[in-house]
Image (cartoon, rainbow, N blue to C red):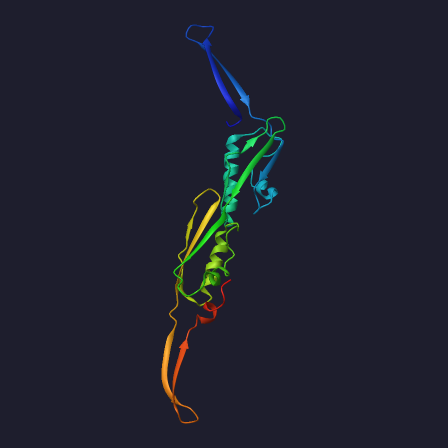
Length: 214
């Protein structure tokens, strides 16, 4: 039923031959006094509580709580976030404080591959998903669009998203630079009628590539 932490059964002979008497002893879960979330930054606690059927004043039902935890995780997922519930979830028996620690996934590293001329800083400045940022799939998708819209690359992605540890997200973004560096060579005459050489370098990536690197 989800209302009890301990259920024991004592079986004894009944009053009549062939009968048995079963005595069930239970330890009821504590009554919930309040619900406290910790570690949540993407949503206020009131928003998380709103998706739960578990409410203060009720005896804790672990079956309902399991579903409520899934509801909270789904709320994060629906908005593009990643989150999990820590194993340290507990209820204080006397005051009935139900503590639910949330582990929100954050970006711990960003790797750019495939760039030969374009500095990494030129690419990552288009990104909001940087180390330390709360990971959000929707925001990351917009990051990739902005990188592509710089017109420096033929292709951006597909990106690799890995979670080496709980609450950690590592992003890897492969890029393919556009073909640049076409050289046009010709011959012309100056006003003094001396033969001069002319070489023009067409480098659409030059301005970005040549900026000083801090």
